[in-house]
Amino acid sequence: MSMKRLICAAAMVLLAVSISACAAKPEQTPTTVDATVTTQAAVTTAYGPDVYAIEQSIDQAHLDSVGAIVLSKELMTYSDFLADFERDHGRDASIADDQRVWVVQIYFPEFDTIRGGVFKNATTISLYDAETGFYYGYSVHEDEV
Image (cartoon, rainbow, N blue to C red):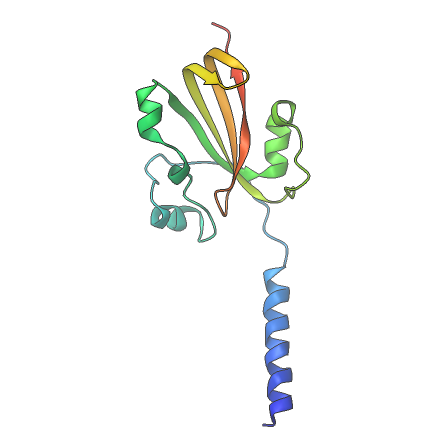
């Protein structure tokens, strides 16, 4: 086989792989995380190889030291997140609607922010990229007692 044909064949294989990688993802539904799934290997087994182990981003020792409790960790698409939490967060144009995200809700008896002051009986809603663990930010709400 000539070098030119070999290069053309390799290019066609790469194109075919690229096209299949861009194929539409199956519809995702929100997933409540099993509390026993804590390592990357366990997350890969439970949710697939492209899902970040969110526990890597949660400082449980700090949460314990301030009396905070993780209420939920959910894996969902960004559009599902917006349907549930847009009023709290607003839309981020840099995140695709079909992109999977982790939504972590944590209760704090007292939550101190740099600019916003201290919130009593607060719940934070944090947003992370489900593939990389990139932290997009949070909102905080003071719960009625």
